[in-house]
Image 1 (cartoon, one colour):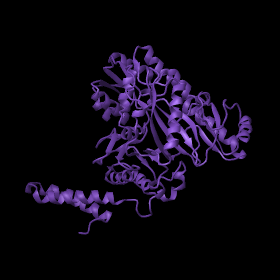
Image 2 (cartoon, helix red, strand yellow; image 1 turned 120 degrees about the horizontal axis):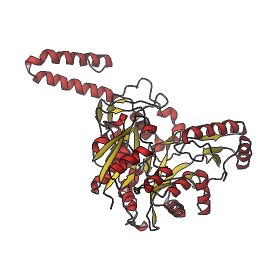
Image 3 (tube, one colour; image 1 turned 135 degrees about the vertical axis):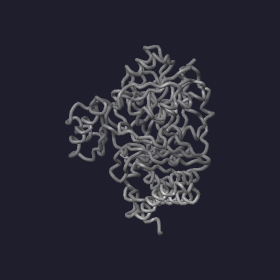
Image 4 (cartoon, helix red, strand yellow; image 1 turned 30 degrees about the horizontal axis):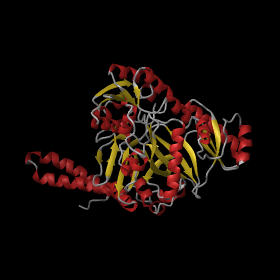
Length: 505
């Protein structure tokens, strides 16, 4: 049996896995970089060891160091989380070669489905609809021009080994084809060390909808229904919800069956995701398969009531699925917002820094998957995500109301976050009505900008006013011998309040 797991990751996903381990009576081992010595996942783990410098290449992407720590700590298994090495087939093979259990699908499955061209061919053979496009890699800009003309504009050129929106370019017309082809190849080479690209017909006004799947070592595969992931910026998801407000029961059933067929076609084991594009006429097409746990998995857990990390561990421990397809029912509605340290008013530039004050919301139906704490410094070396804010309610309307409330209560000072931007997304009528697609952020860009003169929202004023009130009360009840020191502090805050225009003394 699995009794000790090394988590080859950091931040909130490392803590998420460790929590599941704790509940299952399994010891956890954290690895960390020099930049993460005071990280919350290091403090949470049963055992922890530094594996290198701040750069990912020196730490979280260093296979040799991770394997060395795993062997010295005598772990039974390695969980890769998401990102970093989670979809690296060579890492999975190395783990298995060392006699350590890999918590994930077979390396060959990862390889086959990580290559977008191979994945398309596998899905065609399995009878799963795919977006019209090329079945082989493009060899030249001239071939790109010919194939674009055959498929018909607009066309998307995509990196075969891509992910996260990198190595993708939209080609609207013949005059853009060569430039976009070269740009996609260059970005694919720098991001994935592989410049292989192919073409797909661009589906206009699509919904990005994914199905969570689970498979075991005995041929059993089920789906855990859908997630709507269409609120995206540059192909990066911002807000997700489950179930999708766009799908009807008949389409949901057909897409779920296709997701299971796709997973069975490659002998999938563990937790994964089949991603689809659905056009405005409700035709759906296979987009890609993620052979790992996804960032947005909590909303599936909330509406289905199944712990996906525990299921991953049980499957890796060679146990059959205890859940049948007919047992899977969606209950209520869940929404997830990604809380990031980024400046949305400055082209979403990452904004690392020290969290001076942190107030996380609470209440019924509220979940926060986070890797930070008050006083923690967000490093500049990694993804700027602070955490994930998840709400659940009995209906979509109630879930939106709850998300509005908790976004108002969520306070982070000392650095810039996207919380206000998320509030504006939730308040857009098209989002409230569930009538949006992947063009949402672009279409409502003007509405999502802050109003002039409202850069400093009332939350800043309320924090200042509350602290001044605290100091005033403190001054009245403090030891007289300390009054001179307190007066200095209080006067400083009075001055600050006057500058902000919130005090009239």
